Length: 101
Image (tube, rainbow, N blue to C red; front, side, top):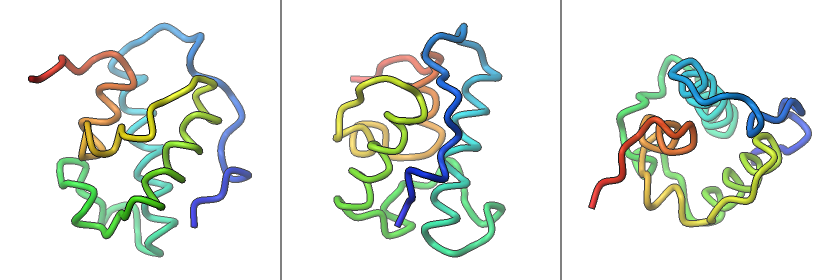
């Protein structure tokens, strides 16, 4: 399982939003997924849906919980369903992604 103690304690919420921030969030999510799946981060396709990696509801909630702690902000537990890939979720969290309806 993803371990909150492995999370970098530096909060990102107060930092200005930039494409670099999106890449940092992507890297964090990829690292946690790779750790959870016991695979190399290079094997994670940031455009692939989370379900491709077997991210079930419990693992998704755990991921969001760790993201909340790392980012220092409250997040909806449904984010991995609303933004179903690393790229989409990181884009949303960094404020770079545009809302799709």
